[in-house]
Length: 335
Image (tube, rainbow, N blue to C red; front, side, top):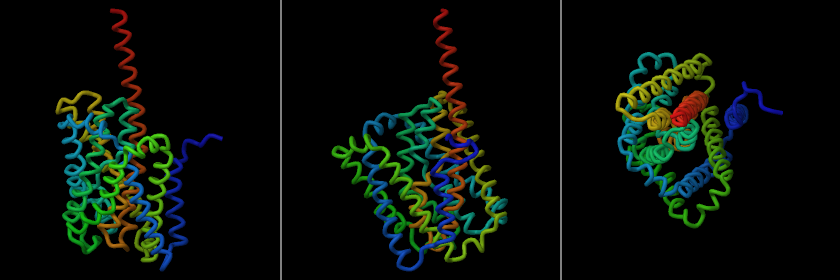
């Protein structure tokens, strides 16, 4: 039987199920310590495999398009934090401090890699530039995200660690496995290309593990006693507003700066999205353990909203590009 259209994808259902299980059966004591250790290993394995998957040819192919990459990075690490700060006086009183700390945290996160490239491809954008731009955003975010988080995020929710400590922990947990994986690409790269399902399993599995451990900790600390349904609804509204502004600003700026249609598509999809895969592990390092569950909640909601919205845009823009190409081809044949 085919899935009804109103149902979300399998990973979204898995995320919801994980949150429900963590709410009803949170891990405690020795079990929590064991899950935390397993999660750390899973995250390291995830970034190791991502490093092995990324080819140097893809990096070189898009690296020369520096104007596009600068605009994407400015959208990701400058525009988003400014929007988050501008919206704070309006939305912060409507949600808890921890939830708005999560909103500001998602504003300083790097762009996604897989979905940005996939949507760019569907919409017939500049795929090689998307690979380079999204990868560069993810790499730079390892250093820039903790710095920005310590500047703009509510310090009551942040862990009592300095920017250098946060960067060191993130480098150790994410960058070192990534580099080790990339150096191992010559031996395992082909195997990973043949077994992409393994990377997907580790990718999604590690996120589910982090979500379970984070929400377990938050539930034990009384998360659902402090977060009301109205506050959750306002986070959804805020996520929609944030994404709408980001989509408009990236599209408007790309057009005004004279980028062609393919590059405009790349800028919109790479500059308006935020990474759940990188964000949740970073949250564990940057924020205190009892605040992680509430902090990652806005990121999880924004992630699903951006996927659904960008999927519709990608299909629509792809159809337009295909129609335009067909019209151009028919006109040339008549000539």
